[in-house]
Length: 230
Image (cartoon, rainbow, N blue to C red):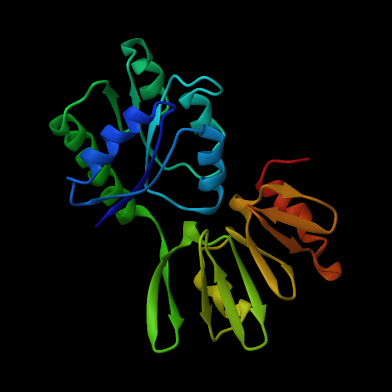
């Protein structure tokens, strides 16, 4: 199992250290690094990663506030030069806390903690198998943003890609855990927990806009109840 990761730090030199260490950890794939926390937040809106290396003290927004505003919560390893921030990090269920400058051995120890935590999560998280052509792909239920039907085919829309399968929305909803997905249109069913915004005739999930069919407007009540909205 490989961990996908990004790193966020306003100091380029700190990111250089993480890149060097990450290149020596066989089970870690560092996909991107950011000196701008807001660019990283935008990236995380459309890309799923397992782990974020995150500096706590940054000029425009703290690492703690970055974690609080993420719609999907990856594992976090906080990095900082200030030891007094450690308590804040662990209050947010961080995997570990790295005090700069940190050695490769200390970095590896933190990454191993993340790998162990990911393995435990994988054992607990529900999944389904989606048939695509002659193959069946294992998909975590929490990765699915929404379902979109087009004729005889159905797209399982994930943060960074789509899986096309020959089946109906009704068939797919029978495979998925009850209560997590709601049909809002003849051609769409959405993951309730992924909703970012609700309007009268549409729902927003990440950068996707999903229409609400006229005959499905009553489902908004169920959605609001599930999200504890009035």
